[in-house]
Image (cartoon, rainbow, N blue to C red):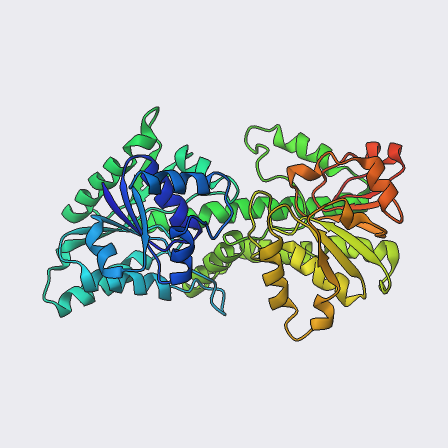
Length: 454
């Protein structure tokens, strides 16, 4: 099938590469010429395990191409995926200007029937706005609105495992209109996703608005579990309980399960923060406060300060002359995404208290440098107090403590003897509970986890 992907960012690249892997002819378009130049020269502008190899393979096979030519992209695909960014607006709502602009371009250039697929994460009602924008452009050329049908097909991709998630999905959600055009679009989407349903049916068909809400509901539920566990971990610290034992106790209940029950420094990234905020905003627009989600957001923002509070409790408010090694900058492992990363808050707060930071991350240091330049804009002296190193062990040299923010596998079993030798004092603040407190105590390491009781 001929498919166009509008937007060559995280969702667009994964979608395009994975659909090409199934034999489809994919045309990826983006308005950013630098991004297209990188892709056509063999690079990938984001880090995602397995993605670069898949893109290279399908470009070589002639099934995947990248361009800035909008007219050519509209002419190419019978199915047009809109996979552009929906950043949070100032009021917390999703900014749909790029989605609507993509829709207008489709309406401006299309001459044959098209299925338009909302792949971007968008609020309930966006499909109606997309359809209106396309029809407005069709009207200008006196073409029938029946040429287009808008489908909602939200993505459920975990950063760091996106290729695997797309190729072996838990579920595929498709929302279509209950009209003849909607039924034709449903059949085309069924055909497109047939290879992903070979072993058993994973597709759930529903109306468009239900599909739109499903995406937000899923991310809001997962974010709620994270904030709930962070609240319990903070309580465990106060009462002397071990949150790991609590996690095992409640996760063994089949009604609850173990997923997303790991306490830490708060969630970040491109999805949970903006999706929870956007869902809450949508509810407010309809006269309803989602009080649980408002609390989820508040808890998450406070959780980003948890390690700072533990450090302050241990060393005091004045950290002048102190140096901290920091392992992990990305908001989660297997990605270089620094959006809403807790490390940014932790670094800013430690610098504010006079400390110096030597940080290491396996892949996110270039993106982290850009993010910190934004965070410390107007404070160049503060930025100078943050150094980065390619070697995690060299970050420990003469540091007063090690602070762990991201749970990269490379951090799970370090040479603890070397860690103790390099640190000025054997102290670890573990924001991801990578180590067992009893084992740390045996080694003589002062250990501060999240809700872990020695």
